[in-house]
Image (cartoon, rainbow, N blue to C red):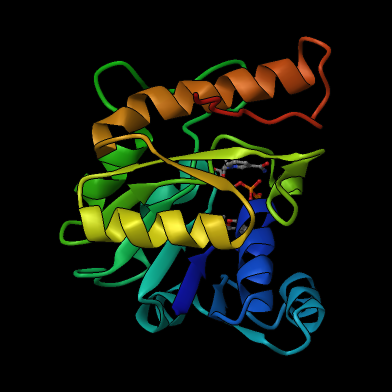
Length: 210
Ligand SMILES: NC(=O)c1ccc[n+]([C@@H]2O[C@H](COP(=O)([O-])OP(=O)(O)OC[C@H]3O[C@@H](n4cnc5c(N)ncnc54)[C@H](OP(=O)(O)O)[C@@H]3O)[C@@H](O)[C@H]2O)c1
């Protein structure tokens, strides 16, 4: 698929690199496409991806990944152009600047705000509930980490479930986009367990079934 990213840091860079490795056509959308950081990333893909402006990356993508800090998300989306008809994967978490908690929740979510800011885009919330360091390898021993994914457009959500599965995740359809109100606190739980309550970042959530 054609995938564009808005942001190419820990999440955007890692996801884009992993998708490029599995054959997708990836364009990293960054403010400075000639900058050393993103050029290093492009080199790491073996030339399978390229860097461009966020607007060019978004225009390229059938799937567009939003992977900026929450405080920058609205402006970044504004600079990405018209996303009508595109699958917009929202990986952001609306963190307080000091990581002490979420800046919004209960009655809305970052995913729903993103959908309001990008009318016409098919917003799917995904890849926000695990540390970026596990994206390229979500295997933990004999198990795959679950990736909880929600969105209102069923075909768009299916596409993202398959993109997660192709990276080795156990994909879980978590329901409509308003479920982002639950997935974002789950990300906060991951962060607090990893960095405040002694479990360290080598952890992931798994939905068990029988
Ligand atoms: N890190 C994780 O483990 C993790 C896991 C799950 C979800 N998330 C969420 O994913 C999002 C990104 O996190 P990250 O760790 O990948 O952050 P990051 O490493 O700081 O990368 C952020 C990216 O966004 C770009 N950016 C910042 N402001 C922008 C703007 N106004 N317009 C366009 N691009 C802009 C940055 O570009 P410049 O280099 O030009 O500043 C950079 O490429 C956050 O919302 C975070 O909560 C992170």
